[in-house]
Image (cartoon, rainbow, N blue to C red; front, side, top):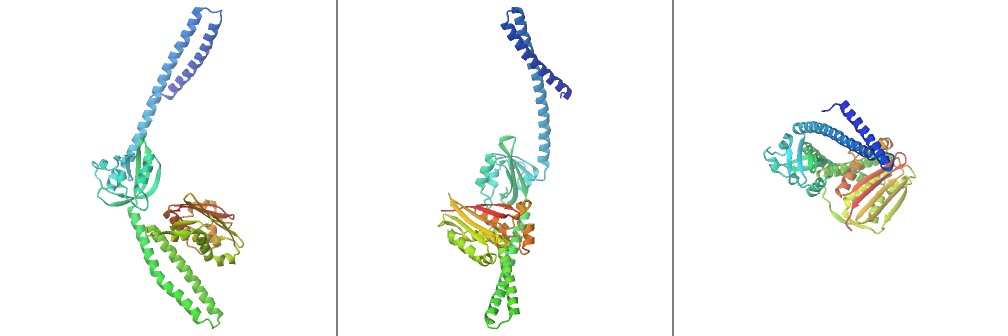
Length: 422
């Protein structure tokens, strides 16, 4: 391999020769147009320029050869490091082509897929992707084939022995346009633990519903039977009991929604919905609080008579939670905007307010389970941090997206886009 000094010398020589050629060409042109010099001088100048071109060619060829050697050695070193990392990594790696055929694998991948070293290349990765509510195998295969970078998607895989394992999938292009590197992190045990937790929460909340409902029924019965007997202390105590019972019911419903969404047992049941009446019913739920805080409600509905076909329970979870948050964190005489636009098979919902907003640095954590913004905690001590998590899960279950624009002390705007059937 050439030294840096020698390569620098040849680069300098290359520049000098180029300058000589430019000057020589100018001299030849001058001699050709001048009557002062003869034919011998003209030919000598041409030969000098040609010799300079030949030397330049040899110098550049030498430099190109050295650069090629340097690049080859660097690539060899990088390939060696990558191969060592690839082969010895505890993370499962596969190399596949765009048709899904497995071209190579490391020991961790062979173990994960319950295959053999000499048989794993006979498998097709696309065929190993198990159908699920999480991902469509055909869509995922299309993305991989198109060269789309995939980062940390949870999917189920069918192993060589027919078992299902859950993995965190990442896919990147590699070497050529037709090769992909697939990284697989085994999360099967974590998935089982999460499912067990969700099942426990669902069971516990179902069991809690019965005594809570009994307490509420007895409170209503006491109010009714003691209606004629005036006792301010008793009424105050009953009001406290009822308020806390309602909080418990809301908490139980949140936990049930979370467990159903996470376990995939929330069966979607599309039905025809008139959006104007639907929004009327949502606002009726919060009419008392809206009136108490003197909140101005602005509605913008396009078209006003819009009808859609979707799951009313999921849509109710989305809109009621967003409206509840807006009403809860609005100051007195604040403004709540509730609007929808149905166009080209897409329903866009906008719920915005001019309330306390959310600190910019906390926006990315907003849809994390149990997370509450710092200013929300100081403004309202009550809250579980489940509302927006449930909203996002519900939006995604309906095949939509949700975005947020916010600024602290200026307000928050949630935009939900849902595909709808006309």
